[in-house]
Image 1 (cartoon, one colour):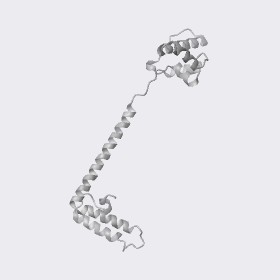
Image 2 (spheres, helix red, strand yellow; image 1 turned 120 degrees about the horizontal axis):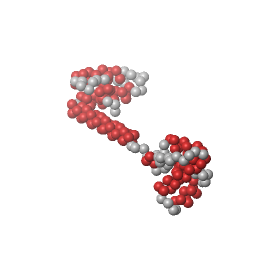
Image 3 (cartoon, helix red, strand yellow; image 1 turned 135 degrees about the horizontal axis):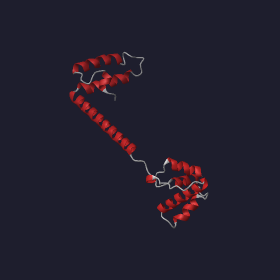
Image 4 (spheres, helix red, strand yellow; image 1 turned 90 degrees about the vertical axis):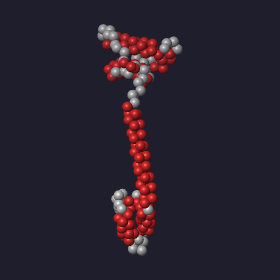
Length: 177
């Protein structure tokens, strides 16, 4: 059922006399005997009668008002929870992988810096060395290959911080391939 205040067209703080007058004028306007050609006249007349029934009795009216306030508070609380959840999800730190630039490029393209399939390289090394040593050796070998290919003097490269490859490492790894 719609809000009885909006059905009768009165404000929430309307007095009993104002509610009664609004109901009478609405009942006259939507009465089925006055609106023979309107198929919805009966529905509107019944809705107006129910609204008046709720608002004319002070106990029913206060019960209705209390339920409406509680429902509004529940909706507001639910909106706050949803907003807090969205905020928590948006503030969550992004996942950081332990993958360096060479491993990332090998995973994407399927070939390591020497032209070997990445799966063969990983399978051969996985049996004998821990992951941190594998990454260090792969990065060192890739850096050596890049230096030889460019005929440049050897320059020590700093390892990427916290497992996240900086953009320059990614670009240089792509170019090497």
